[in-house]
Amino acid sequence: MDNAGGWEKSWEAGATPWDLGGPTPIILHLSDTCSLPKGRTLVPGCGTGYDVVTMACPDRYVVGLDISKTVVEQSSKRFSSLPNAKYFSFLSEDFFTWEPAEKFDLIFDCTFFCTFEPSMRPLWGQRMEKLLKPDGELITLVFPIDERSGGGGPPYKVSVSEYENVLVPLGFEAICIADNQVAVKPHLVNNNMNLLDKPYDQEDNVTFSINFQGLEKIRIWKKKKTS
Ligand SMILES: C[S@@+](CC[C@H](N)C(=O)[O-])C[C@H]1O[C@@H](n2cnc3c(N)ncnc32)[C@H](O)[C@@H]1O
Image 1 (tube, rainbow, N blue to C red):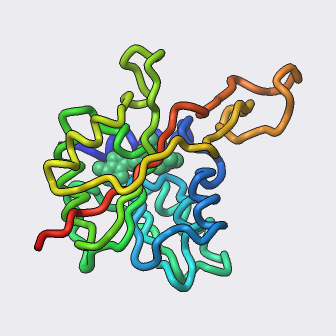
Image 2: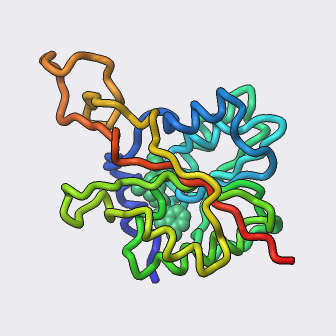
């Protein structure tokens, strides 16, 4: 299975329309309100890794994993002089085959589950199960939930039940589900998906608009305790 090829090319070409140009709003919110679990944290398919550096602190060491060597090299360099740089690292590995020395207290899946075609999802679940400590938390940003897209992406449409179908048989239970109130609001974006805080009718070098409101839910999962 060649998992890297297409992604590597996208990163090399800078064709990364999913890149928000900053941390995912919900991670910023949870981080600012000290609502995230502490401990060893993994962001699989982290891309540029804004969430990685946002979550990293003395109480939380964060590993940003991505199959693309290009983005891992770029981000390692780009963020190396941040004051919290010793609390995170970027690693170029395939999520499906990587064998870390230690498991994780927290895993944040953001736009990663929806990256894979549905036949890969059971394997995604098995890997989450393997990589999470027995008492760990898996946070999934369930996105994009869009009935209007008629089965489209990006890259693959998801639903809450599709996560359940994969995780519940593995012994996970949802301890929280909520609409993401801080999903990206209607925004104009430029070619690199950088958010532009300007009104809609303003003429600019803008290619399209985005709005994730109503398309995202946050779900937190834990392994059920077995007695
Ligand atoms: C849709 S992008 C999302 C990136 C990031 N999570 C974000 O929200 O900006 C999917 C990312 O997963 C990475 N990826 C794809 N397959 C992977 C795999 N098997 N193991 C690790 N990373 C992978 C890609 O290189 C890409 O950066």
